[in-house]
Length: 350
Image (cartoon, rainbow, N blue to C red; front, side, top):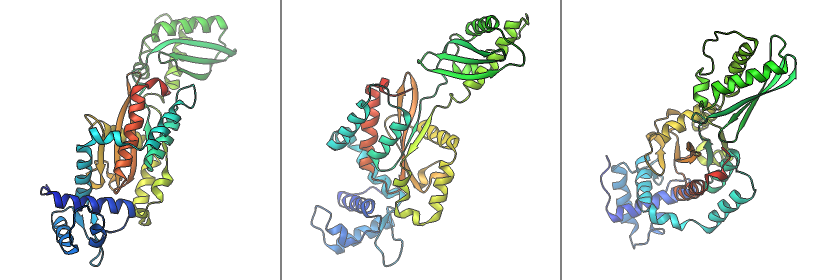
């Protein structure tokens, strides 16, 4: 645990963090002297920076270089930023507010997850990731079947969030329109009111004691219905702004780049990691800096998360960037977008 900081040490640490975020380079005492508000000599600043290094807040990459924040130094800066966030949040730049308002009201329809990820990336100048709300609790309203040929039909599953999922089915024997209609009615009686999670778990396939043509058809439709709904439980995922991250100086080292690409190439890994992080957040933002991150592949980065709710289902806004992320801009961007979604969740395609 790092020692507490007095006001002078905190001001100097904040200056080092802000200058490092801006330049991506080690920060000298002379540069800090020109940045702090109080009148301090270079010698005093050097002594304080040396003390901050000894306390674990700063480190010196090379003997002749300036200093850079450690994960603990970034953490102290972020904690100070968050401590006054209830007031600071209203200082968001007018341009960011305008961008959110225009982006979410540009069309008469709901905003898709991909568009939200693109907007989040623009707001934060980082990699924006959206994990859409889970479909587990969405319920089936009815099942419809439309003949396409004697052995082919279109299955449509109507959900209570106004979504329809479809799939083309091939039968192993002829199915007349009458049998298909009866099978659809049987399946609707079984499926009506069931959640997507229940159907994926096999709730539509009880033992068939009658073995009529319609019931056999309904059993096959039930299996196909599970396939149609197979990709829904985890929710949609989109990411935008990879170039925002790859342009940072940190990626001159190939190891962070390899870790990032390994992480991003697996949507399942992204979804599981961000859901895991979001599960640790009780309220507001979650912030994980470098080695703090419980997801091993993300320990070269900073990750921010904020949950949102659409139709009673939880999704996640996430921002990923270098350890020296522009925290204040990222907080403002996530706060503005998350607040807009919370105020009008109907604007988000669910």
